[in-house]
Image (tube, rainbow over all chains, first blue to last red; front, top):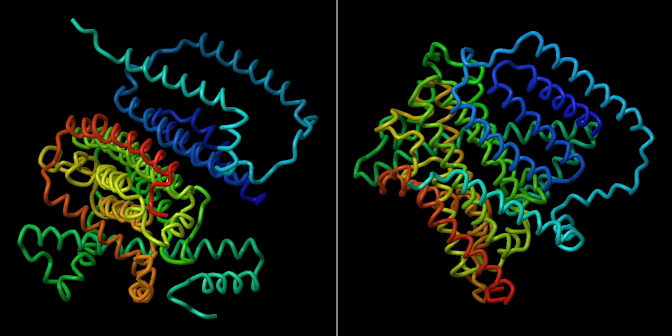
Length: 164
Length: 363
């Protein structure tokens, strides 16, 4: 099992790096799909099968397909790429490096974390998840569904053409 | 070892024990995975080839022709000959096509259908992986194939391919909803997403009979929506021959074209198998409570034969669709899903929830 964990982590990290490093945006999308699938594998290692499948449906099935659509329709090529001056690149490196520094400083204390609760292998199964969502977290769960509904209505309103 | 055609459990445990006694658990798992993989590749090839043959025969039947009848008895070896022809053909690459993605796309389509086939219950105890959320898993992986279709269309660098891919994307993303909701209705009836539990719950009658009217409605919705999701006629806008030459796989040749072709037929097999498992009882024989004599006769037919028979019946219906109805326009296609199937489906689910709550179905 430890071997699978290292294999999946390796794939996830490598593909995440390739998302940033690959030149063509469509290749980035492919590497992002690989990254999401390996994270779904991590969920399965934790016995959270429901979360793994939701992850696949939402990220690879829906969001990545929309990404692919958008990139295809944008007709990207070298000529209409925005030109970046050396100064902007330099500033981007400096600010990125500072963010990295902050992250390292935050990650330094990671070893001191205490496990608050024993890991329950059945917690990720759909029956337990459903029970927790519909009893302990009933109101936030329903409120987030209202949020989704309003987002959908907003998208439809924005997408509608003005009537003349 | 006792090999029993009615219950594979003893056979699979025998294989498992033989492997674990001779090697470490990790290697045993690896060898088991390899065995299952090889079996599925062989199964995939045979079923894919013979579905192509079946399609041509059904088409011939409907159009009052003979169909393939020269190679082998009844033309049974025709598709194998076709496969060799496709293997010999030259692979043609387009100038300016994205080579990496062009080569990758057929494999994504094939992998998506392989992932789905792994979770199907073929017979009692003959079930590669019995996931806790089997139906949901099948629904998730069947939506991955569209990524391959989109990439194939984009990387070909051709107008026909791109239009075909975009149409296919719009179609699959919208019809996925109806497929998922139609399956959800049976999840409400049986109270589980595990495929083995769903099959067990149909021991005394299939859900399409036990769930009467709402189950029949969701079965019909599933048939229509899954035909559309697999890009088959009358919903084959992605490859509409008369307007797009061949849609997203216009520029593919040789074995790469064969991959798309095989994946299309395997996807049809998979949706038919899901419908057979969920609505028609999977490998469960046809039983009528009370008629013990008939139930015993039905029990003599092996579960695997029941499963394949039901799947073949649904595949025949889907082929019948293709050769009977004219192709829809893209706006009619999207209107059918969003204005008719989806609202009907949502109302049906509320109705089913009410029926299950009141206990108004045959238990």
